[in-house]
Length: 253
Image (cartoon, rainbow, N blue to C red; front, side, top):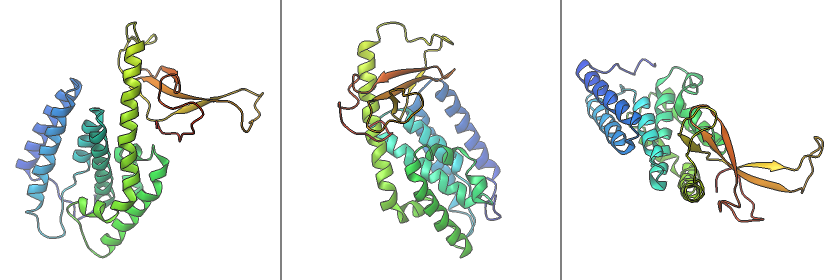
């Protein structure tokens, strides 16, 4: 960590750990809304104590923001998914602010989660450049939302897309629930935890390895076992995710 990042004072650290343990228990029970509340409380607590620090000193809040974001996204509610990715963007800002090098920050969960959408790479680079510029001017920001507000226009397309993805995933889940009449058990590991992919994939006609332009393409939405990775493929047109002959990006939209 950079030299302006301080360790949590003992009483604050004890409260953070207690909240984290409660959240871990609730997360295993999929009580995501309660987990969301706990990490919000944890973040507000850190910010309260952080505001008491001398100027140009701060606490690292990346893990709290990331976990808060995951709890929001896990609820699979369109507006909460958008808010969840906003929290993960804030976690990335925290990581860039506090780690000695951007390369270290990019090994952490926030960056790895965000870059699953390649369209956001330029935005993340702009965030990094803005933060480094502020650090070089000794302008140490305590509240990461100040950085987010400065690049608000750049992140809006990405955040808007998250709400659309959640709406379409829910549409697919409703369709699947109406069709899947057997036990929802993975044939490989017997788990019943499935994850709907955020991205469409495509199947093309095989032409002995040659790429045929303009050939038939079947849009597919994967359903993945969360334990072993076994994957089932569903036709995105049959499942009403997209209309026939309608072009789509790689996202579930």
